[in-house]
Image (cartoon, rainbow, N blue to C red; front, side):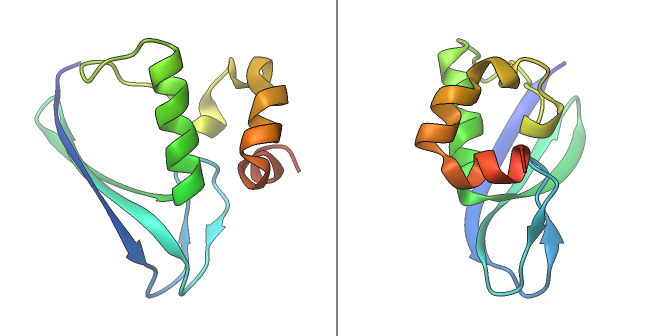
Length: 100
């Protein structure tokens, strides 16, 4: 995979969306990240809760992934359960959305 670019803006939702990281609702009026990028020549967009994006970036960094690496969304990450303890402590809202 060829990672071309990614840009993230933090915006307020004009309508309800679904977080691409946890697959839970982003409510109208809620601040969230809007991500636009290009991989292998294909454009993509994503929306995520701000804290879901922060956790994803932290996991990405802890695992030594770089800009050329593509990681799973939080909900699709098969190894995230191994990290449940510190995620619950540091990102309690994300933990509640991932493991209700």
